[in-house]
Length: 136
Image 1: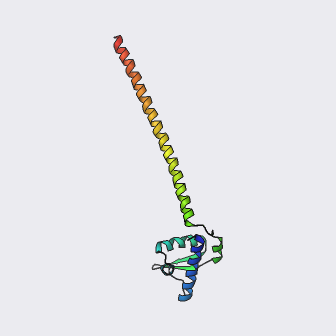
Image 2: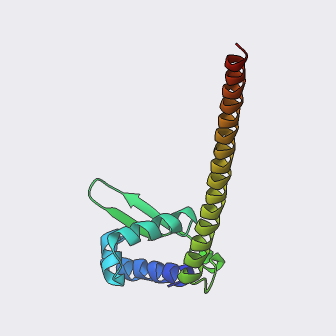
Image 3: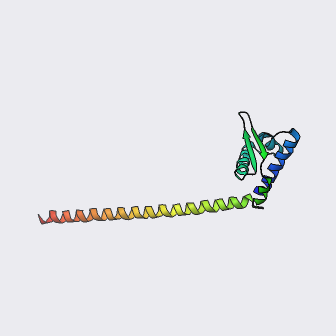
């Protein structure tokens, strides 16, 4: 479900439950009505509150929801499928992994060169010492 449709459903559920109960509904009631998990409900609430679409009222026992500015719903992107965003995230992760792999390969090549240079230095010193020993 895209963000636009999800937000419209969430706001509609808040309105229906507010009409039925004559008070702002609990987050759990909205989630039950929509068949969402409470965790998904919290995520949607935070996103919609950040956009100024709903208001969240908390008390020690529950989280109440109310519609703040329903006109902001129309500013949400329409028809952005979750699959596309997931595909973008996967592509981004793969490119970051590729960059990391290239850095690791460069570091390993540098370490191998340093090791080779170190062995060459040790071998040169050893040969000089051997020549000194032969001259004596």
